[in-house]
Image (cartoon, rainbow, N blue to C red; front, top):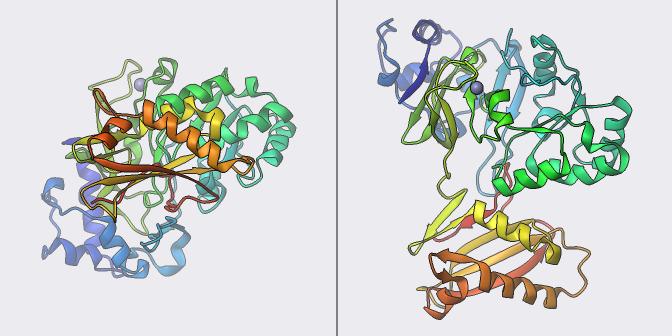
Length: 414
Ligand SMILES: [Zn+2]
């Protein structure tokens, strides 16, 4: 389904990459002999992340080497190598960092904007219709960031949901959470539970969920003030910045060419959305989107039951007094009994806990009775029925799977 398409810009970009002396990456991929203004978006092949990782960034560079302004990358998982993206300067990004809110100084404790994308984000803040001053702070030293927040009188925060949550206590100690009017959050799924916790922490903040990726290099999905007021979990897309946007079997497919160093043509983001509405009362054009449960990331399905991140967030939040709520769940085939699934729960940040064994037993008992796998089936029932062999609790300093986005569910049974 095509959500947005700028046919004139698409034709121009196809012509540019065909006549480029710098790379033949797309020319080989498209296997057309000459560009044609009649080329249709849907005739072009998709571009996958795997192809990008497999092609050296210099072999898919569409500007002279000296025009590469900076480099972005994903952190990569333990088994995959990082995906490196080159970026050229962009005249205009079209993003409004204020999101229409009456703010002037956002505190930035959001790793990509503190690192690779800091210069381009500063540009976006300065060229916006409503200019703001980004206060780039230190996401690795949150107490210090809270002091910087006080000294500079910030009125908004850009962060991941996890960082915003951890920062809250320090903002409470050194500054005033009531002064925060906007929380702009990205990189992790913002569940209803987490959103509720953050709203309590920052009572006057409008909460915005934004979407970007380090291959695109900027935010392309964002909520309007109307959505924020209503606590709607939906997004507009930044059509000015996009050549095309599609939903293919639920996957967001992006055609973006503001970055002339490496334009993305029908790039499969691996992120899943669904249509929320055909239009929005705010008057911005186009349909609106919302997250759909991303297969294997926000929900995993094993042996006919489903584990949803949203449910687990709520469950761990409700027992956070026992051992915190920073968890990662691994579902794996039990080596001793291959017909059964074993669930390993890792809990992080429990350094202050002294009686690990008794706390683990408490957490396990809570999970056995309250974790519902299917209507009327608790984990304890599933163990009794021989579907699950055991639930094991361990306290860790770092999760066994570390990715760019905090991963809560890991399915090893695939
Ligand atoms: Zn709207």
